[in-house]
Every structure is written in structure tokens, then in C-alpha cells.
Length: 141
Image (cartoon, rainbow, N blue to C red; front, top):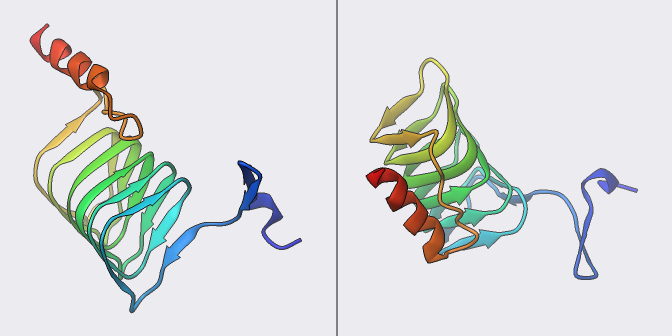
């Protein structure tokens, strides 16, 4: 009925919607999620998501961010690894290194750090030595 479009079945359990950390909430620790997540509060720790991460204008992350896609409107002080598309909105403030396949930066966005893009982005879901070894071999070639 409600949210039926967003429901998935995972190992016999139904998963619905997007995870949210609302304004006024502070979490200290690491978060791992299989789907999408929206951060409007504060996360002091690492975030790994197999889906899309949206950081709202009041959202803050201090740690590492690993995900498939990300839209950042808030403040991030982190090493950011995005497998597909990272979008920095006009209100975003990102301090840290970026590793992504594609990057979109709106006028007014603030980014301080190094950026590596277009190459092989390490698959954060599979922490195997093969993907890192493959990246090192490509650097040598």
C-alpha cells in the first residue's frame, strides 16, 4: 500500500524506503547499509552504503564515505569513494580526497583536497586484494 514502489525482498525480509538520520541526531560510530541513506544530522564515523547517499544541507559527516552514488549538500570532512557519480551541490563543503568515476560540481560548491576520477574505483563491497593489485598494475603500465 504505502511505499510499495520502494520495497525489496532480501532473504525473506521486506526492506522498504530509505534510511534516514534526521536533523538534531548525532551518531558516533560506523554505519553499513545495503540500500540508500539520507543524512540530515551528524555522523562521526565511517559510512558504507551499497546504494545512494544523500547528505542534506544540515548534514555533516566526519570519517570515510564509501557508496555507489552520492549527492552532497552539507558538510563532509572525509575520504570519499564513490563507484559511479558524485554530485557536489552549491551548498556543499567537502574537505578530503575524492576517488570517483564521475564528478559533478555545481557553482558555489566548496571542495578542498585531491581528486582521482575516471579510473577503476575500488569496489568497497569486496575488500579483495585483486582489485587493489589490479589498480597498482595499471599505475605501473
